[in-house]
Every structure is written in C-alpha cells, then in structure tokens.
Length: 268
Image 1 (tube, helix red, strand yellow):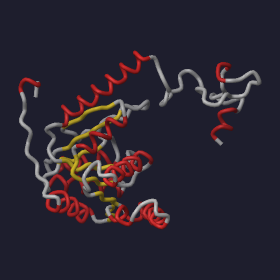
Image 2 (tube, rainbow, N blue to C red; image 1 turned 180 degrees about the vertical axis):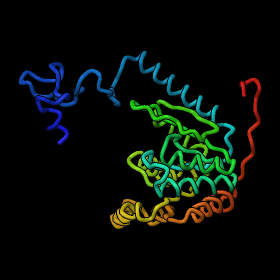
Image 3 (tube, rainbow, N blue to C red; image 1 turned 45 degrees about the vertical axis):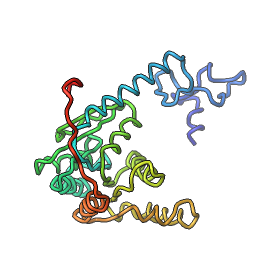
Image 4 (cartoon, rainbow, N blue to C red; image 1 turned 60 degrees about the vertical axis):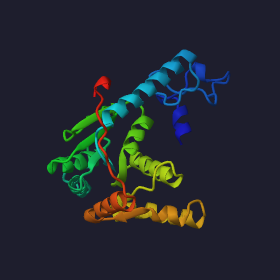
C-alpha cells in the first residue's frame, strides 16, 4: 500500500529520474522522494561526516551525563503526549507523579505535554523534583512548564539512555508507538540483564489488556518465558503502583542513593 502510493504519478513521492531505471520504474534501495524529505537512515556517508556525527553523539552523551548527574534517584514515567489535562489518564499520571515525589523519588519524563506533563506536574504539586529529557522533532515539542531540570536531545537513542540510566523503576501509562518503543526496550534490557530487574508497572488495565493477552500468546509460542511476563505489573490503582515501585526498588533490592560530590574543576 505504501509502495503503491509512492509510485502514483500525482504523489509528491513520485521517484525522480535519479531513482528510476531506463523503463521509468523505481529502483529498489534508492532514496525515494523529494530532496527535502527527511531521511532517517542515510547509509554510508563521507568518512569525515561520519566522524563528525560520532563526535556529536559523544558530546550529546556527555551533555546528558553532566546535566543529570545530581538529579537523585529517579522513576521514569512514560506515556502519550496527546492527553489533555481533563483526561482520566492525565489525572492518573499526575497523581502518580505526586505519590512518587512523596516517596522521595525524582520524577523523570520525556519532558513534553500530555502524560509527561501530568507526571512532572504531580511532582511539583508536592514540592518534589521534576526532570525532563525532551527530543528535538521536525514539529517542535515544547517542554512542559513543570520541570526543575530540562535537557534536550537530537538523537532518540541517546535520550532513551538517559531515561533508563538514572531510574530505579519505570511506570508506563497509556501511549502510542513511542511509549511502546520505550516499554519494550526497557523490558528487553531487563530480560537480557543489561539493567537490573527494576519494577515495571503499567497503569491502565483495560488499555494494556490486549497487549498482555498477546504476551500470553508469545509464552505459548515459547518466544518469551512466564518469568518475562510476570515481571510486568498491571494495575489501575496508583497507590498500588507506587507501593510496588517503593518496595521493589528500595527494599527488595536494598538500593540506596549517595549524593555525588560536586567537582569545582568540572564546573559543577
């Protein structure tokens, strides 16, 4: 369907001459579309350009490490940017942020609107610490106004490193493709032992029910184990979600947080 649309004569994505063979048909593997189309995977570039990209990625990592080194023990809340403040999911996420902050956690989100704003706002409601890791997008996503610490990233994968690296637990509220990406990357890191088996709580039973049913199908097919399924907690009760986070992250694992010392010679 996508290929058909791309080849329609009136489509803005009609291949140009450089992308067609002698018969006027699109050549497989060539860059489609107009020059202004953003290409995410561009393939090999000049060596100098690749080196500069590596430096930009390295600098973005360092920038993130420096900005978030002193944020304290975090819980990351994932969720959609599309819910308004009167939506039940927004209200639920705001309450979650409030209770997490009361337990002493810094509330970290993607820093945008919707669920992210709600969780950050809840933390600020009770004087807690609120952190946002925003992403630069073609259609600008402005940071929400409830952030104590805000940092912006160009690369999605660097941003996800920061959202995971500083967190003792993860709360996933209803969301779309981005939220699913964050959920499954996090659970894969836990499954493969790249991060510890930190709590992973999904808020919204009815929203997540179809996905959890599919995970049971995956158990039957032996593509995941029962243990993989069991590490995901699903609830509608915000207080229960925060109890799970607090109990598992701080008591079961015996995790504690010692505040790093600031180094004046690093400009901290």
